[in-house]
Image (cartoon, rainbow, N blue to C red; front, side, top):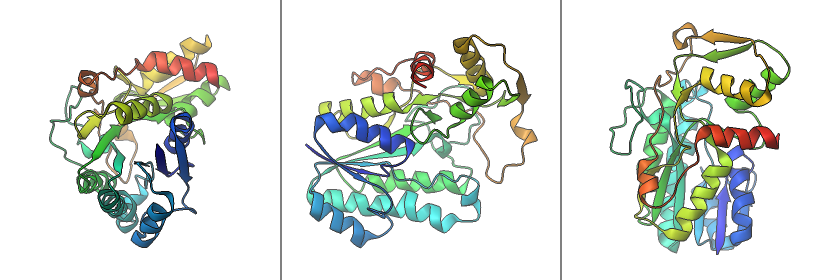
Length: 278
């Protein structure tokens, strides 16, 4: 099997390349290798690599910058996906695209399912929602919503920031009122490969670890795993004047993924594996 992985230098992309390599030939494309905002570049790479599966890990993830750089966010997160979808449709390749919890408004008290109506509150969230819709231009596609990713390289996630601060004995600022589903990129990559191999019904799935917590809960679990007494500084979301609005409750349910035989580990177990690794 021939895999084309875009955004291969990011934390999710690098994990995908590592996991897919034993399963076939992997063409790992960084931004310098493939700019998905250029349709001609996309067509060229498809002709050269002839992929069976396209795994799109390219994304514009600068949430706050997108409030005044909407054009850039749309170019990557929406129209770049459309170019990939059209090329995949023309070549008969399977397209896998990743989206985000930011497509929701966060005004709930339970984990979102795939049936819940999106209501993005930021340009970033809107660009990602459009990307979901454009991915469907390829009849053979999966849109996998992920959230609060950690564990990739470069290590720059919120979990890494918390882990580094606690290890160094520094005061650690953590949100107490943002509910999340931390997701280990290794587990997301494993689930992605299982989807490729088993081919459940095409469409939208939440691909996250199991369980929910707050960022305070994440920090407390990190401290427990390290057997240290941390200095945690509770922070409320309203106290930070973010340019882009964040969903307050953004946990995602992975029940639909479970019904097709793909079981995601609990976030605590995933975090323990990561802490041991680093």
